[in-house]
Every structure is written in C-alpha cells, then in structure tokens.
Amino acid sequence: MASGQDVAWIRAALNDMLWLLPVPFLLFLASRYGSTLSDRAFLATVLGTAVLMTAGSWLRAIVRRRIFLSGALRGESPWYRWLRGGAGLALVSLLAAVPLAAILLVAVIRSTGSLLLIGFVVNVPALVLLRLFWERRLAAHAVPRFRPVLALRLALAANFLLLFVGLALAATFQSYPDFGALTLTEAMLSEAGRQQAASALLLGLMQLAAAKDALTWWLGQQMLPGVMQPGLQFAAWTVLLATNALVVWSYLMLCSAVMTLVHWRTWHPGKGRS
Image (cartoon, rainbow, N blue to C red; front, side, top):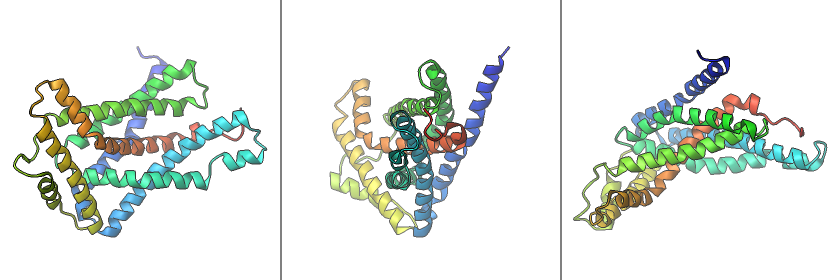
C-alpha cells in the first residue's frame, strides 16, 4: 500500500504533467496552422512564446542570484538591491529567448511528420519524473531554497540528452530526398523552393531552415554510404544534426518556464535571508 509521501509524489507528478501537456498541444496547432499566419500574427506568436520563456529563465536566474547574494551581502546593502536582478536581467533573458522561440516555431511549422511532436509529448512525463527524482536525490545535499531549481536544471540536462539522442537515432532510419545527382547549391535551392507560408517573414525563415536541412542531408548522402558500421553512422548523423539541438533546447526552455511559473510561489527565494 502506498504511503502518504508516495501519494503526494504521484499527485505532484500528475499536476505538473497536466500543466505541461498544453505546451505540445499548442505546438501541434502551430504545426497545422502556422503556415497560414500573417506577418503580424507570426511576430506576435514568436514574441508571446519568447515572453513565456523569458519569464521562466528570468525567475530562475533571480533564485540563483538572490541565494548567492544572501550568503555574500546584507539584505539592507544597496549592492544587494542593484545586483538582485531586475529589468536589465529580464531584458537579457528576452533577447536570448526571441531567437529560440523563432527557431522552435519554424521547426514545428516545417515538420511534415509526427516524430518531433511525439517526442515532445513523450518528453512531458520524462521531464516531470526526472525533476522529482532529482529533488528527492538532492534532499540530503542541497539547501531547501536551492533544491527545486537545481533539480530542474539537472532534469533539463538529462532530458536534453535523452530527447536529442532519441531524435538523432530516429533520424538514422528516416528517408530523405535523393540529392545524389544534385550539387550542394542545387539541393539547397530545391529544398528551399518547397517551402510555403502566407507570411513573408516566416517563409524566409523556413527557406533558411530548409537550406540548412538540405546541407545536412546532402553531406549525409555524400559521406555516409561508405560507412557500414551502425555506430559510426549514428555518430555521423548526430554531428550533422547538431543544429537540431537548438530546437530541443528551445522546447525544454518553454516547458521549464511553465514549471517555474507553476511553482514560483514555493520557489521564491525571499529577501536577504541566509
């Protein structure tokens, strides 16, 4: 029979999953209808996604910075007020989030299969369970104020590796356009010409992403046929698909932002307490 602690652990995991599931659902809607967005609608979607990412990364940065400052400075010191993290830190977080949001949305809108979205859905329970696992493991090591954020960082790192390696492994068994008779320039122009979108801005970004994919596939078809060992083929595809790591990381930043906002009241570091 499950103990009260186990029941609370299961309830917390289910609660986090319910909050996170809308993220892949909204990305599914973007994959279906994103190409019909106007320039303004696409920019608004990118900005809204970036603001959500910024909220999470900024709040986690505040936790880390204030916990550090509480051990180094007195709470009444003016230095504490200047360094605790305000509009400047939020602006830096936003500037980093905008390109990540654009990369994620372009990748989702361009996806023609269900592999990426399935990976995003499967990632939801993986991220939740990894965070709770690390929070339990850190109970005897990390101070309570820092434990939730540290557990989330460890969960993000582990989940990033799992999701990226899983997608790279699946990529080795996918079929790609045959570029054997084309030059690299012809392959990139051919793939870029296949893109369609109502927004000129979105279309340009999709064409850039398509040209990057064509470069990857062309190199793979030119380099990998002579490599017979499956391990070497997987390693080569992992290197060629390294740029997809930004897509994976962008998605994880979006998920971690949701979790940070959900738990912010309990994760808040307070003011100047040691």
